[in-house]
Length: 369
Image (cartoon, rainbow, N blue to C red; front, side, top):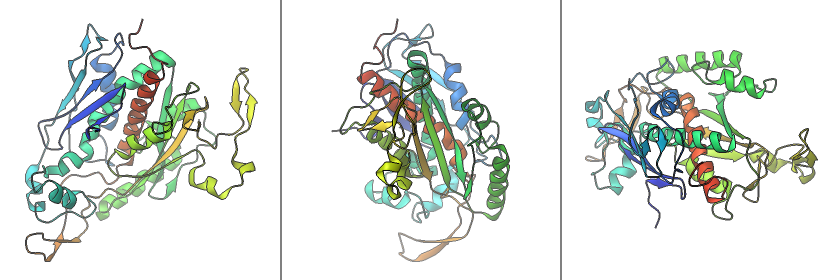
C-alpha cells in the first residue's frame, strides 16, 4: 500500500506539517551519500517561494529559515534520512473558527470535514494549504543540487500565462529565460508582459478577486532513457507529483492538447544529427518523452493553476449545522494568484521525480565519489 504523504521510490520524501501547526518539513530517504549540501543551498531555493515578498503575494510573513536536523555531516549527505524543517510563526488561526461549519467555496473544507469526521486541522486549510509546499521545495532543493552536480541537468520554469495574459518568449535565449524569470514579482521572463500581469493582479486584488494561470517548465541536459514504463513512465510520475501541488488542475506535455488537432506528419518529431554530432529531433512536440522514456531532448510541460480560492468577494455557502445558506467573506492574508510562487514549486517537484528516476535507472550512484 502506498503512503499518502510520501512520494518517490529510490529518492523519496515524506512531508509533514500544517498551515498553522508548529512547523512544516520533509524527511528525504534515498539521497546518495557524499552530496555536498548545506542550509544555504536549500535556503536560496526556499526563498523563491517565501510569502510576503511582494504586493502580488500573500502578506503573511514567514521567515522560512530552513534547519537541517539529520542526514548531513560536515556539509555532505551521509546516506541516512535527511530531515528538513521550517517553523511557522505568523499564523492568525482565529480567522478560521467561523469556517468550522461554513465551508469556503473552492477549498477542501467540506470533503475534509466529512472524511476525517471533524478531526482535521481546518486552520488555514491545514494539510490542504499551499503552505505545505515549503516542504516540497526543501526536498526539491536537494534534488536540484544532486541532478546538477551528477548529470548537469537544469530546470527552467516560469509564468507563461496569468489571468489570460500570455508571455512571448520566442526571441529569448535559454540564458535570458534563466536570468529574467525571477527578475520580477510575477516570475515572467517576458519583461513587458510581466508588467501587464502585475498590473492585472493588483487590480484584481483591489476588487477582492483572484486569478489563475499557467506555469511552463523545461528540463535541460536530460539523459536518454530516464523512466520506468509502464506505470512509472516519466509522464506518469511527473503528473502525480505535479497534481500533488495545491491548485493544479491540468498538465500537458509537449504539444499537448493542441497536438490532437494535428496530423501525424505534423506532430511527429523527425530525427536529425545535432551540431554536437548527437541524435536529436528537429522539433519537440513529444515534450522530450516517448513511450514514457526521455529522448534526450528537453522535457517540456505546462501546468494549469486555478484562481486562488480565498477571495474577499462576497460568496454564498451552506451552514453545515443548520443546512441554511449563508453569506461568506473570507478574511485574512491571501495570494491574489498562486502562480508566481508556484514556479519554484513546479521546478522542485520535477527535480524530485527526475532524481528518483535517475537513481532507479542507474544514472546516479548511491554513493558519490
